[in-house]
Length: 232
Image 1 (cartoon, rainbow, N blue to C red):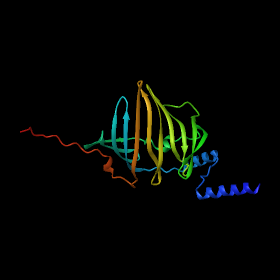
Image 2: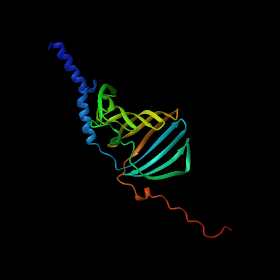
Image 3: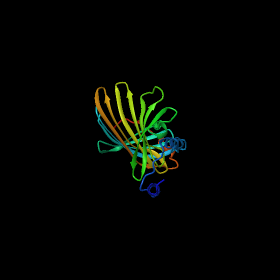
Image 4: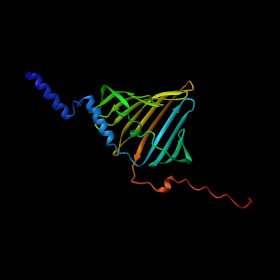
């Protein structure tokens, strides 16, 4: 190898080590690391967070919620509607899976094919974008694209298409790190509902991961007893 080529190669390698030139990995190696990262993924058993949802279309919504979750148990507090604080707040209780959990929505090589498209600069490192297609007939929710974070090798972005009856839409979900967990940060959807345009945006934040929540968190308050004496 000519001297100048070896010098350039050495310079590039040194800059990559220093962080000036992001390291560009082979796309198949990235997918291997992605599979390993998903296999080692830790999920929070208990968490508190808030989210804001904005919807424009057949129904307009502007709300802010605080969620308390322990396993399947969920306490959902609606604290503002259209920017107006609710007093008292609306509290709902339910048992359900986390529909936005990364382990539930991230595509896997056993059910999707993934074709590398390009790298995406993300600060001092590179992320990796893939085109994604289901290997078999899919239901109402189909992943169409994936961006793998170049540090954790977990999904940074999941692009999707969805359909149900007269509703068809497409959107994306963005994920990031909170504490030691990988959680949703933003969702945006554009859809057609009964022939009309609709948009929805959800922003998550203020994540907390306590070791446990009191059992009373998920118990609806008892209604006040009815009066037994006739009114005066």
